[in-house]
Image (cartoon, rainbow, N blue to C red; front, side, top):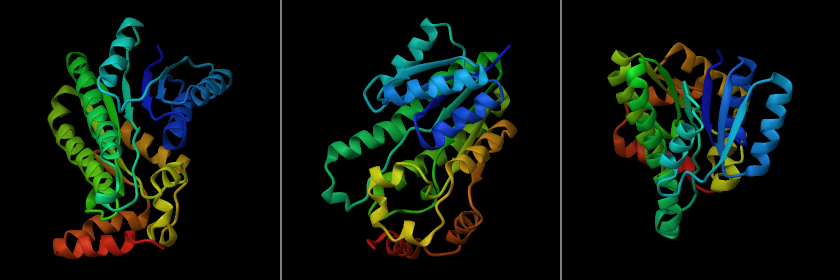
Length: 259
């Protein structure tokens, strides 16, 4: 019997590539995003090429109660999920005081609240089954403060810390929690966040979303705790531990400054 994966932020980028990976492994899917047109095109592609079943849910997970509504819809449709990929998220580039609060409120609601709520809902259900796998998409931003993207970096640090703690807690229930930490990746993220204005994207290699998705998928299936994409990105978190915190923030600020 085929298993089912739920992927948020599935209409493009890493989420879309994850959908193709699950389809290639003969897995049914629930795909969630705001864009109905993109989801429908993706559904048609996957079902035609791989003969899997794809159920789409058009929903803005940053809205209050959206995670619970999503979960309730799956219960009503009697769709059982074995894999949860929390990929939806966004960032914004600019000084903290110059960005409208509504933008940050939406970012925290999506990057933090929706991810945490969905994880909580499925973990409660899976504990009785003694099985389930979660992939939470964080970022290399999780390892240090990020002036000019302060809230985004903080939100991704939350995802990493939460996931590592849950990975430990849930071992006894045979539920794995994997955190994927990519660096800058070829998605719409750079345009939406205005991150292309920073030195960061100028000085690092931009990752291919398929490669990032493959790394995350393999790590999830093996039950690994944390996986970082890119050789250089793997070095940074260890180096940061040896540097005084105020220096880390200054270095991060220099990297994040406008081009």
